[in-house]
Length: 334
Ligand code: UT7
Figure 1 (tube, rainbow, N blue to C red):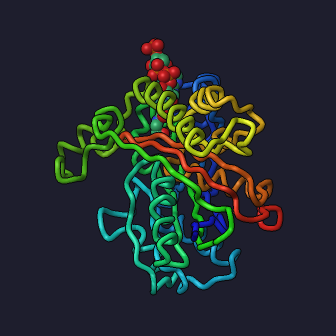
Figure 2 (cartoon, rainbow, N blue to C red):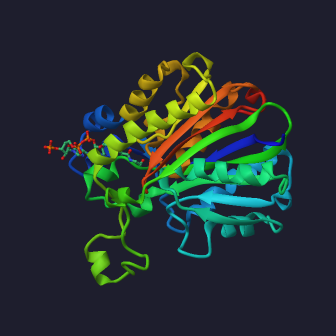
């Protein structure tokens, strides 16, 4: 049986750090409130307005190729999970491919908000498992600060910019993407969205005046759905694969709120030492959080480690992916 293995991971973050203290000067908030309610201490922000999502993705994808010793021309397919594409079209995937010279690849953007990366690796894995492709790149990246209302303290303190990418390649070993469970419920669109700029509310003076080109979130409602759904879908993937809490080497949870992560881990019976976390440094980078976690923890990952990757986000979208890590990360991690 052919499986899709993650054979390399890379990330990229803008250099500028925006701390909670900096935010205290912009909106009516405090460092203490943000840390207590979310776990975030600082986030990155791409201040250079000449740089869009594809520009921040390019160094990550090139680093991926360098780490694996392949040329961009060898990439068959590039899927980009993002809700902050450079523009409505062409796709950010196409722009990344053009910039890196991946001239033999096709690709598309995948709109699943915080679940963009797990939807992306699940989709990409199918092209590998059928034998159709040998090299699929999945990017998860967002420049959330480009769609934040800096007068809305309930959203502008949560999000940050950045993301990463993985390479999927075929393997016949007992490693790789072993299983996934994905869900979506468009009814959740009323709780978390950006309404302006599409065919329902094309950009106009009204949409700008009514702040419809910014993230809108009903925080408490999203929180309740997130904590319930992440725990439920993680339990589901464990049951389907006969995994007990002690079999899991790492829980890799989307980084929206430390309290959501803690609640999910608790329900799974997993201690904090087995939970990948970096929300304190990057905030919520939407589709970027999971590749950034894998990049940050790569050095600690060993071949055969059992990873349960879980996410919940706008859509609503949510799911879990069971991955058996395919290589010894100590040689490659930062
Ligand atoms: O990744 C995509 C999915 N998104 C999520 O999973 C996010 C889920 N939601 C959350 O993480 C949390 O709901 C938030 C972090 C967004 C908000 O935390 P909360 O504990 O649910 O706060 P709340 O909305 O219930 O607000 C509590 C209080 C309110 O004041 P009053 O009405 O009690 O006086 C807010 O106005 O906190 C106030 N508040 C703030 N105070 C200081 C809201 N934002 C802030 C802030 N600084 N930045």
